[in-house]
Amino acid sequence: MAKTGTTTQGLRSAIERSGYYPALVAEAVEAAVGGEPVSSYLVHQETTFDSNEVRRHVTVLVLTGTRFIVSHTDEQAADGTSPSPYATTSTESVRLEKISSVVLSRVVANPESYTPGTLPREVVLTIGWGAVNRVDLEPASCSDPNCEADHGYTGNTTADDLSLRVSEAGDGPDSVRQTLAFAQALSEATVASAAGC
Image 1 (cartoon, rainbow, N blue to C red):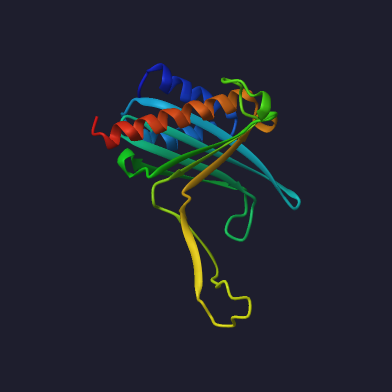
Image 2 (cartoon, rainbow, N blue to C red):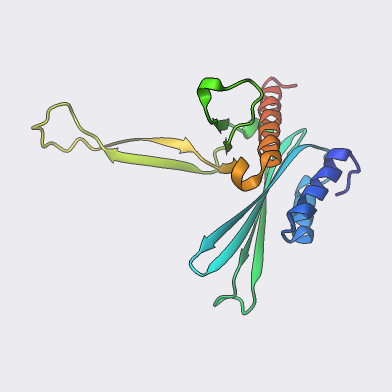
């Protein structure tokens, strides 16, 4: 990374520790961040099993003073378009004022004995900025059980640009802590951005 601040160095180290094409991922993230200092970051690697294949995916989330940057890197097996395995990397840079929602869901064990500061068993971070909306539709109905009229459809839309699930069992307690810290930093940054700070 161009900056030498500890957060930027920590981001590079986290990318390297993930072991997932670190040179490729770091270059893509560095290009998206540019010269801005990094305020907070999260590196999350997922492994999925698809039939006879194991596929890896890494998501890097970066917060700067003005932007939220998301980077995805996926590996693909050789196919009709490429005789050798390949990886695709994409980055998106979103101005902080465009962030419309930051949702953090926490799953805790034994909620009756929960004490503040206890690490959740799992967290799901969902961030919306209006690039992707999910529409859930279902047939509309009325209260008359004998009605056979077509009442059309009813439903709702949900901003669902990014959803990231991190569990203590699968990813480790440090990953859960980092997700909580990143979610808090992003929430605070969006409030400051909305207030014009």
